[in-house]
Image (tube, rainbow, N blue to C red; front, top):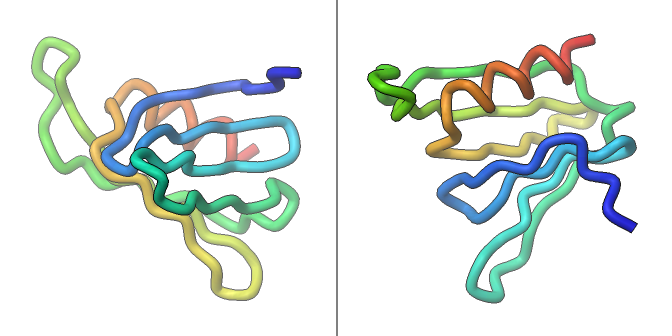
Length: 89
């Protein structure tokens, strides 16, 4: 069953927001990372390329309890802002 709320591309593969977890699904057989949503303590969005004609990019850093972080590079600005808003509720 596909319970993805948001799925977007990033440098690492795909950044996926699900009901119970956030994960980076890695490409090329590399190991992905995930965090339970209830443990997320904050989201930092850093614009790395200004948005021009929808081509902007951001780096999203998702913080959780225990000092764990999940970083996704080269996320579209529109998607990054939506993810930040969703996770900071």
